[in-house]
Image 1 (cartoon, one colour):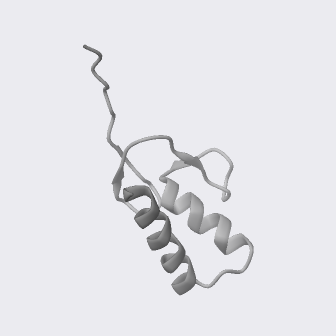
Image 2 (cartoon, helix red, strand yellow):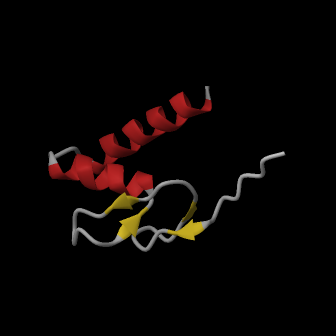
Image 3 (cartoon, rainbow, N blue to C red):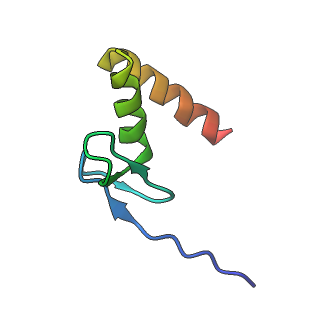
Length: 66
């Protein structure tokens, strides 16, 4: 039986725990952050408002639960 080990990490940007592949912060191109913060940074770079960013993230999370 194969056992998958997942390491829990803390995002230095938002302080929340996450697992899985991190994103590379656009702020310094070396800090690893959670995928949600990576998405926020990408959306912010193209001028998407924070309230719209949260709606987009909610949609992403819903689609991943299916």
